[in-house]
Image 1: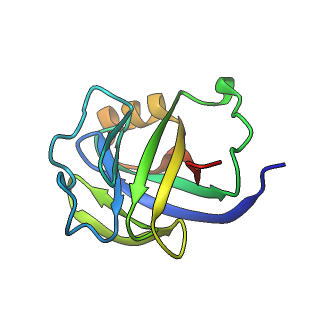
Image 2: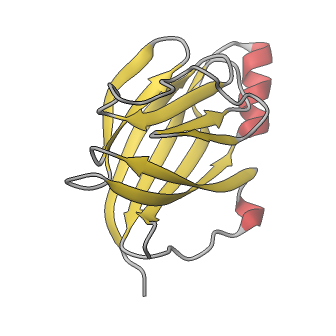
Length: 155
């Protein structure tokens, strides 16, 4: 049975309806964040990078990250507004959180002690509330929530 080996909560400052996760050792990435961002997809990918589209323009999203030792059990789709899966190669085993507004944020996500290939499932709830907040007040904290689950691509 699959087990969670690491949990982490980070905040992602969403700007222009987006944020990203990018390998912390980003010097060799062919397409650094936010170049060629996929605005029409909930989850977009580039080598070493995940692009995530938000329901709201400007706010701080709560992001729960889980690293699993095998494929995690499926999430009930009724609990989430959006969900998508992708593959990610991380040279360092660490991901930095990036904002369209402020660039690289101080928080780092630890996947492993070294690089590897990962599968990832991104689930989100609160998209409509984040959109309404953007139209009314402009900003908020924790209205939109993400669960991002990683496991080895070899699992």
